[in-house]
Amino acid sequence: MTEDDTAAVHLMTVPVATEQDTFALRRCGRSVAELYGVEHQDQIRLATALSELGRDLLAATALTVEFTVSGGAPPVLLVTLRWQGGPGPGREALGAAARLVRIRRDGGPETGHLTVEQPLLISGTSAAGLTGRAREVLSAHAGSSGAEDARAQTRDLIAALEESRAQREELHRLNQELEETNRGVLALYSELSAELEETNRGVVALYAELDEKSRLLREASEAKTRFWANVSHELRTPVNSVVGLAGLLLDGDQGRFEEEERMQLGLIAASGRTLLTLVEELLDVAKAESGRLEPAWSRVDLRALLGELRGTLRAVGPAEQVTLAIADPSTAPPLVSDEVMLTRILRNLLSNALKFTERGTVALDVTTGQDGELVLTVTDTGVGIPADQQERIFEEFYQVRGPHQRGRSGTGLGLPYARRLAGLLGGTLTLTSTPGEGTAVTVRLPAGPPAQEPPAQDPPGRVAVLVTVDDDEAYRAVVRPLLDQVAERVIEVAEGGRALEAVRREHPDAVLLDLQMPDLDGYQVLAQLAADPTLRQLPVVVITSADPSVLEHDRLAHARAVLDKRTLAPQQLATAFAAPPVRALDGRAVR
Image 1 (spheres, rainbow, N blue to C red):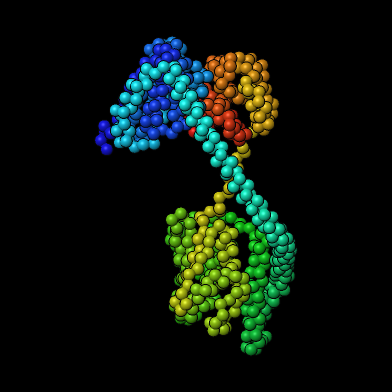
Image 2 (cartoon, rainbow, N blue to C red):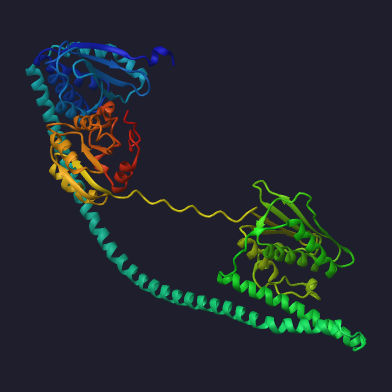
């Protein structure tokens, strides 16, 4: 497309000086809109708006009306009314026209122009092809008389009445069809309601049964947790005694027992230590389930912790054909965690790996993740875990069945316990495994305790005193309950001229100001408030139902916000009162 294709095309400029000229202006607007394919109702709106604006501007000097078709897609019919002196358009005429068509206004009240926009439903190429014909139509109607205009309006009225009659007949037919349909719907609704009621009774009964079962399961789970905690706590003391006494006997006089007896005492001590480990795990699992197991956050010396693990597990003694390799990080990252929990996680994972690895390597590697997290990976070359059981092994007391379990004691609590502890430390524990090749368990922990959630901010509070200035008594009655939600006390003022007096008398915390009032409008009241140094900082929220395009935004600079009267809401008002100056909550800058 060339530059000429998108340029605006001037059709004609029509002078308007007399009442006769306004008749001609109406016919020109109607005819040129009809030529460009504008819908019938939009033709009438355009013609009526031009007639009202032209008649209202007759007192202006050098009033002309320019018809132009803009380029672009889609094209727009632009009708620009220009004047050089005299009063500008009145608020009543301008408001009436703005309800019919879209209007842009530029300039001051005594010199400037208004542009009426009517979008066209044809392409730019089609519009360009009608330029000559449009100029002929405008020339033909430029001199039309009042009688011709009256006859044209009569024809429009007759056409509108015919169209209304046809629509009424069509509506009557549709109503009959709708009534017939409604009878069928009501019958179907009655049938479905009966079925639904029966179904609801069954659902309510099922819900009650499920609720009861859920309660029983909750009670059973709580009873199980209490049982674990109580039994584990009660078992720990006697088991400690068994282990301690067996150790004292073994450390005593070497000649007191035969070799066979010493072996039996050793088995008692080893079995006691195994039982004690199981008791400790049960107690910790019970604490974790009840929410009583909380991390004790402190700085952890990772090198010392890994060194202690290395010595402890080597003393236990891995199989002869298994090598235990625990990393010794030269520059361990700073870590804040629970040292006891972290030790138990790693000891569980390494012990588990050593238990099911007959030859090869069990290794613990330490790295740092992208987000500064600590990554601990335990790998082994053991039997591995089938894919369909890699999630089940994190169920408490579950163990993978197979010949590799022979001779290897265990409770099935190690991995579930380790994952639960990792979660309490703000981290994760994941596992990958291939049967016959080995397993890798990865623990990711944050470098510090989890961040606390920021406290929620309170919503804007209510203002103590609010002055609302609006001459519409009905609207004040409608909006009164809404204002009671954002203000402790509301003072209503029905006239703009009394607004300043009320504000000075009541010393309010905010003002709600309507723009359109008969004596002093909202623009003037806002200017008076802005001019008073003692009232300049008072929050003023402007409300209006006018189209944004006709607002004088430069005169609204002192307002906190400009809100639509039709969609006013308490939260919107409260936010507006608390907002900084020069802000519009509807997305438009007020200047």
